[in-house]
Amino acid sequence: MRGWRSERGEGIKRLLSLFIPLAFMLMTSSLYLFVEKLFLVRVSPQAMQAAVNAAYVCQIFQTSAIALVMMAQVFVANWSGAQKYKAIGPGVWQYIWFSLLSSCLTIPLSIYAGRQYFQGTEIEQAVRSYFYLLLTMNLFYPLGAALSCYFSGRGKTRLILLTTIGMQLLKIALSYLLIFGAFSLPRLGMVGGALSTVISHLGFCAILFLVFLSAKHREQFDTHRWRFQWRLFKECIHPGFLRALNRFLSFTCWAAIAHLMTIRGGDYALVLSMGGTLFFVLPSLADALCQAQTTVVSQLLGAKKLAELSVASTSGYIVAAGISLLFIVPFLLFPSQTSHLLFPTVMLDEQMIRNIFWGIFSSFALFLIGYVPISFVLACKDMKFSLFMGAFNWVNGYLLMVLFLEVMQISADKFWLALSVMHASIVLFYYIRVRFLTQSLQKQLQFAS
Image (cartoon, rainbow, N blue to C red):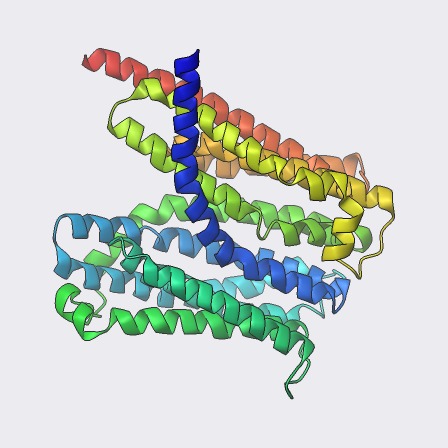
């Protein structure tokens, strides 16, 4: 027993050593989305609602393109490991070309999706300018991801980290100045928030692009070879297609769920935007846990140390539970104070606020715990099951929320609690899949021996 506890303690330390720096970097990247919404709610609750929903529609295509482009990190790492340095520049350029070409398709599609989503809602007029400005990020987000992968794929993360932190601080400062107006700048409200996003991310891309094209990198990695190469383009883009499709299915499902709330307006739209604002930053902790746990499990699988997988799994669940416990104080013990601090212009009775934060806590805790078995599936490269779950979310997610909202007609403050049922089902399905994969791996290892 003592030996197992020692192994578990070492597993937790190992996981935390990976998780903490990843959480810092990912939370830095997502912090602005959270802070911007807190600025906008001080303009008006409707401004926050409009910004949250605009982000949901934009993310459908933006996250799909980013997911595909992130495969550049794998290619760059492989070329670097094989010492095929001259292949890196032309390869990254194919992802840059994809960013440019895909935006020609995703921007018109996003405009159409936005018109369908916002039609007939209370925020239809207020969201228009903000939404159209954010659509320019259909180009800049995947472009920034492609350039980031050029550096991270070679293990050079310092420039990315420093540039990300610098641009996030610039973005927050610009957002405050442009939203509220200061130093002779006009008060632009929501438009100011969108402009700060575009300006700062354009700066992020410009810095990485200038380094990418510097003389040192041109000589070593042929980064000046910018031509579109169809065969190389297909080779680079094809492996990320299933990953992008999975993101597309997941985010269209979430946008559809959000629309069920937004079209009802009133407290329903307000409750959605309150939880949605928090969920712009909280999932970064889940992403960090997923990446850290995937790394640990992948290393164990590579070393064929299947006996240690149970310790790694237990360590993951303990860390997830520990992270969740950190939010008991603000969400469960002092929900009214937390609500007043974050959303001072929102006026709801104390019981509603308590129900809302109970639901947000439940959804987040189950969302976080779900990434422990998800990381195992990713480490096993079981992309078909991931794609299945992306499609199945329409059943255990969208149809479930239709049942709660339209058939059972739950009140607005119960939304996030009802949503936690969806996250619980996801945990269950991935847990069952992990059990199946573990048994299959053990049989394969026994057969090989």
